[in-house]
Length: 162
Image (cartoon, rainbow, N blue to C red; front, side, top):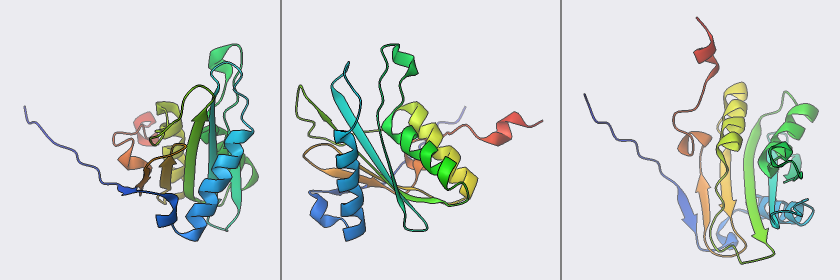
């Protein structure tokens, strides 16, 4: 038996002003998308904004349903919208942010496992890394260079082949 170690690296910013102007715009659009989320049950509003390689921006937000498993996370709403509208265009960057009506979110939001797997599918589909910007309402911002940093042992299509 051999014990192995896996390390990830990420960048942490004190404020959005350390981001490039394109990244600041993307984060702002994710915040605006969170304002439009449908979250009457959790009161937790998540927004995502994707920048595609062609420069277009696609946004999404969480959409809850009284039958909880039927809802969708902001990340998947944005990713699947981009995939449906621009199937041959790779995602360059995704910004994800959140807010709550009940408390201040002062640390970066991390995507759920289903959203991580959906992002990994699009990285593999286009064979290009997706830069990930994670933010709360306030506090530090976390930046990762690839979904592999959030989901190192992702499920891949090769597992379905004989």
